Amino acid sequence: MAHHAWGEGPTLVLLHGFPDSPASFAALAPRLAAAGYRVLAPYLPGYGESTLPPPSDLLAAAGQLEQWLAAVAAPEPVVLVGHDWGSILAQLLLARQRHTPRPACRIEAAVLAAVPPIRTFLRHLTPAQLWRSRYMLYLQLPGIVGWLQRRRLRYLARLWRRWSPMLPREEPARVAAQRLLSPAPTLEQAIGYYRSLLNPAHSGPRRWARTLRLLLGRIEQPVLVLAGSGDGCIGPGMFVGARRDCPHPASRQQWFGPCGHFMQLERPALVADSITAFLDTALPRQIVTAPGQ
Image (cartoon, rainbow, N blue to C red; front, side, top):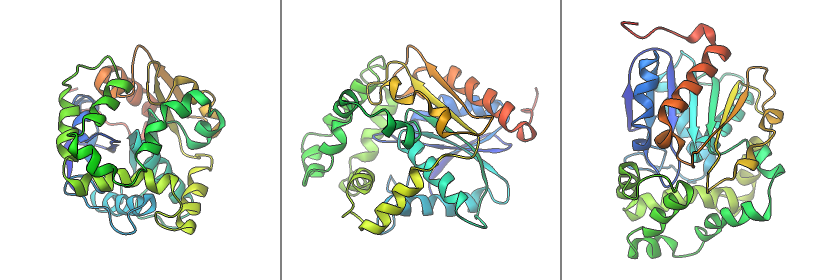
């Protein structure tokens, strides 16, 4: 699986979201590497050179990520840092690990950024959040890929501005993501994540129901939940009480302000400090000192 890498030490895996790419971790990853971690940022299945295998749903994406993690990290444990869709995939991987007697790789902890535990999200669902999430239904429409392409993906740029209005209009990470998503096959597979989550017919009712069962469980591993106070995609109120769904004693949650959806771009130093402080507490035996420190 195509990925970027920084540093040496215990493995942190950064999972991006939509409409995004690993480029949004360009400021965060070196800070985590300087703290003594080996940082890997893959292209999610379906993005760029990473294809999403049939039946092209969330379970298939999680399975491919598990195989890749086993290849690049096993037998050492890993920590997942998931942003947006990366948060949902991290939750799915944690849940699958609970139900796998001998997982191919060991995921010891996770950071869920900009998307709370699904249980938390559904418990707080409001008309205001449904309005913010209307784009998810929009992406279900037949012919949406062709429509977006004919308009040069301007709608995706609009989502960035709506979700993180403080970022510059020509934010390099947004430009990189738009370039990555321009080919029709990539855009189709990226939008497939939304179809897989909301449409039981996408890969079949059984796989859809299994995905929901996994996502609706409590998260037993240590988890740090991060939210931006000015997020235009998922409002900060949707994160309230996330600790209830992450009962591990080391789990924590934190809000950043002023900050929008793409916190790793807006507040990279603060996000990096929060992640390293959390891991120092949750997994102290995994911490190493960076060379020269």
